[in-house]
Length: 92
Image 1: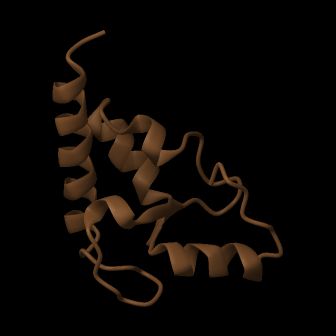
Image 2: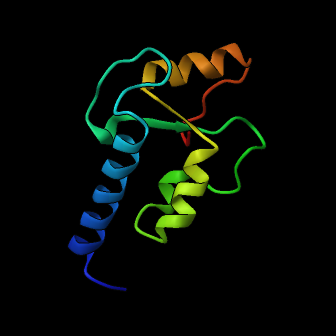
C-alpha cells in the first residue's frame, strides 16, 4: 500500500504542479488561492475520471484529464453548476 505520508506528498506536489501550470489563479474570476482550494470542473461528458482521484498516480494521465477541466475557485465552481441548471452534489 505504501507510506501514506509519501503518498500525500506526491498528491500535494502534483496538485501544486497542475495549479502552477494553469497559471495559479481561478480561470473564472482570477482569484489566487492555495492549490488545495481549487476545484477541477469537468464539463459533463468531457472526462473519464475525476482529477482528485488521479492525484498520486501517473502524471501524464493526470495532466491529460486536467486538460479537459477548468480550474475554478469553489464560488465559481458552484456558479458554473448553477448556470448549467445542475445542483452541485456533495461529491463534486
